[in-house]
Image (tube, rainbow, N blue to C red; front, side, top):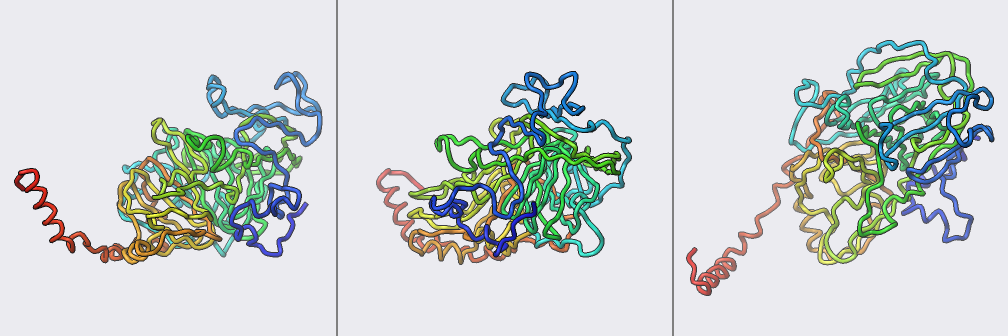
Length: 489
């Protein structure tokens, strides 16, 4: 059925938290936006099963001699066969024709706007300590550009053939994918819708992803993106050699941040078409085409724990200080991905969404800071005051590791003089950060973009030396210390 039209298309952008939609228990509870046309299964990292035709999935075994309705059993194994049970990722699909029924592969021309090798020896990437930013990238207005053709790479680290690293892309599309599906053989895509909804067809079923929601399509899973709202723009965090997980909660205990039951997975929906299809494969950062004479979405039933999913960012349960000081930004982590260093993740996906700020004896803007992580931020909607300069929905801001950052002196001075904050912040806005322990390099496409601009260093010229104004007082204290301890300066 078609999605319900909202009287206010930005209805879900104006709420402080999903809890508002529940109207204090005055109505039956619901967990899906009113204009989402699909049903889902909930629970992060669960083992699911789903049948479009009841009685299809074999019981007591996975690959019987004969599957009901003459279907083929096909397993998708995403981890090593002997991976520990809690890390073992797999799914069994029961389909009209197995994925092996294709007509071979052909190379596609290199997409000069995408990148996969971020090693500095690659002349197509740039290293810079400068704080960089980009205004929103333009969506093509001429020709038909679908999701896979509209990929543009901004930054990244590593290389997919090394099985550790990541890439950050934007997608700029004005057309739905027609008889065309894609599969990322390099890694997982975390897709952030920013403008326009994404109606995503997968082998496991349908996902409807709107601004304020994210979805994860994992390595090897086929999908197709339709654009029900017309031209669309968004962001992608691609990871290699790891999968996204929920961060550990530590002293928070059992609840908080992104709760597992709020992650939604599709239910089986099959498509039987004997027509010409193209499957675009991304492998080693290069693109290949395979053709077949049937739909890649002919899965009648499936079961397993290697399943695409989506999450509504308005359901994030913020935690923070209720006494003094800021807590480190790890409290805003929605999903994390492990690296080979047990003390440093490959990447974190964090959001900054509407929340209360009530800390005393401190000030609202972030403290001046240098840290080891590479930080790339984007804005989904609204206005975000945590950046040092102009920051618009669809834009990007980047700071590499150990580059100092913080607000201008005027903001610092005003916040320092103001009474302790007790206010709701980031109302009507959701920003995100893609943070990594690894250094990023910037692609040629982003480096040469007319949307690129630098943070203006002059904004910090007014950071006055207040300490020197207290020279006499300091000298007196030091003189008294010398006299008391009998030491020489």
